[in-house]
Length: 116
Image 1: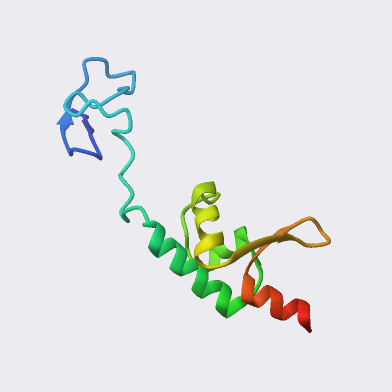
Image 2: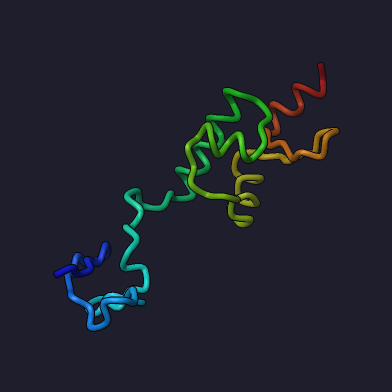
């Protein structure tokens, strides 16, 4: 007989209705029983900030998509609260280029680029 296995609590069961996929695990009640948990724990603000700072110091102005790919971040878009904190913590600036793309840079790098 075929059964189901919860990816969250690893419970194995045989459903009463063999033709309909279960909506939740009968043991842990998770509706995400058929999806494994993310292996990596969520990134803390401090680790996120340090990754952004290091990347922008090395590479200069980048779009969020470029940052996300190079730093291997899972966030589709950054937390607005974290962006505001980084503006005061590390001098993060966001400027639109002539094509309308928002580029992230550090304040010291932005001032040096404008001066030259």
